Image (cartoon, rainbow, N blue to C red):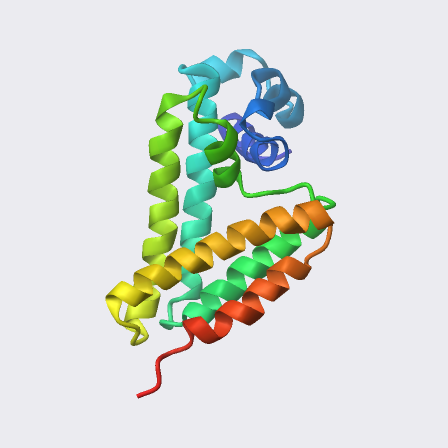
Amino acid sequence: MPGSTKQRMLDSAVVLLRERGAAGVTIDAVLAHSGTPRGSVYHHFPGGRSELVLAAARQAGDYIAAMVHEAGVDNDPLAALDRLVEFWKRALATTDHLAGCPIAALALSGQRDNPDAAELVREIFTRWQDNLSTLLAENGTPPDRAQRLATVAVAAVEGAIVLCRAHRDDGPLDDVRTEITPLLEAPST
């Protein structure tokens, strides 16, 4: 696995968070998955497991926020939705429907063990919603409605990921794209 030791550990922690939830991101699991030496954990993450989990979640959250932002460069919220749906369909297909959203995983199972997780989860979901809301507003949707639609879109995609994993089928993501698309289209003038 190429890359710096720290980056390999972060990437492995993201994979484990997506596939096993927060409880599955143990130091031993990260070391085994990344092939890094035990001493490197506390060198790069002096706060141990908690720091590693939060750093992995932040990396994953930043990646998805950037993806939404880049897809919407032309003020096209539909491009952002399409990018998210296609990203998750690929992630699910390449992991035999094991990969879920690492932020949702942290929200569901990581807050009890890591008090800083709740704030980070809130921050990341809010950033995703704000990115999409901004795209919608720039595309002519009134700001209050843009915020509500962004919430609906993020919640629908997150829920669809769970259903895709449960059914081992990408259909729920396709359903969300089909039904959310008319809501995100530019308002007619």
